[in-house]
Length: 351
Image 1 (cartoon, helix red, strand yellow):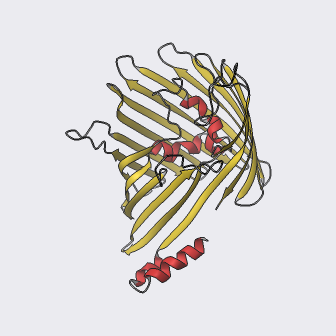
Image 2 (cartoon, one colour):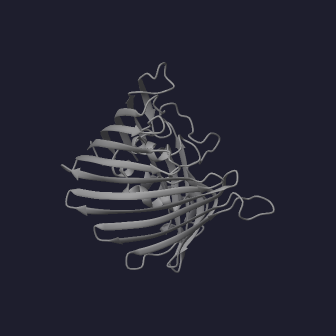
Image 3 (spheres, helix red, strand yellow):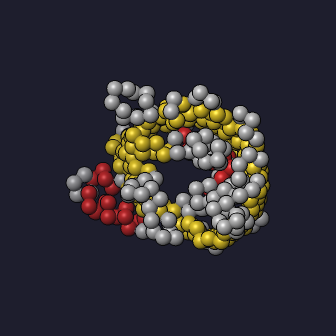
């Protein structure tokens, strides 16, 4: 399919501009679905159990187009259009947005890359590489704890990042393993530049089997009179069949009653064979304002049937001393008590 699309792009445009022969358009996508068991969901009668078919848990269900055009002198144009949906019912994850995941266009060269449009902040670009949710098939089953820092309220650790509308983003070339970048998301509010705006920045380093990154995210007016600030950092190291990783994310809101939460995430994966990977991790969250703490243990097994298709199993158990525990972000629900357990069997396919 990818080769077919490249041929269409070449045949349709090559007669007009021969340099298009070095351009490409690629179709890609990811599908994930499975059955999730949750021990205690508060919305169920008397805090009952739940068994559900859910999609986009391990990885987002997306399809997209990405392209690059050679402009000469080492310069190029790029674009990405990405739609997020649910294979369980075919509905768009962002209602009414055909490309609600990402939609941007930009220019790049030896000087770096600038992109404009709806795109992820740098926390989302870099930090998942050091988190349990992305290193294992756990996905949303390892994002629930940071997302529930204030019972699903405005205080969100944003470990997986967020898409920023109206954003201008710069990423530098890599110098000796070091790269940096900055992002500004316009609030588009008449009469002011700062209101509802977003800022993000990053510094990363990669050398051999070691990688590390620092990222910042700030958003004005996330609550009435309050601005959100998120500082995150992580590192990972590959040793033979093992990968060790960890990260910390600190988020706070400056308001009349300041809010703060710090989440620690550490884990290990082991490639038993070329097809089977085992993983495990531990998360701990400390909150300000005497709101208590939370923790979670996550275990996983991931078996590849091919380079594109795989089966996986995930076990997660969380405890929250202040709110109803919630191990699954977005699709899950909080428990009626302080402890919740979830088990998932899933199937994924990439193209």
